[in-house]
Image (cartoon, rainbow, N blue to C red; front, side):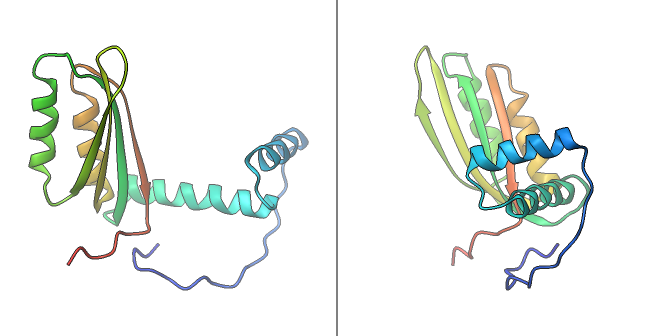
Length: 147
């Protein structure tokens, strides 16, 4: 999978066999999510799996968001999160924090870099004491050059 922008390629047909119960669940998901067809849903699922594969096993450059929910009243936590982000200035593009109820904050960090490095950054941030939840979401579509 190339990280460069590619022209859409013509569609290729494949045939798959599924257990009937899986097909019923697929059709329900297609309807609930508003996909135009099974093909669109399956194409998006395959694309997502290929991106995750590249993230886990490759050095391909990916764009990502790292989402954190944390207790901003936890002593030293915000400083620790900032120090980790400063260690990765090449990869961290920006972050946005929103204060939630009960001493909680939601922070979304936009990053770009090799998949394995993005995973390391997310793991370090999520592992901090006081972080309640965290998630790394990646895509192979890159941010345009900043300058």
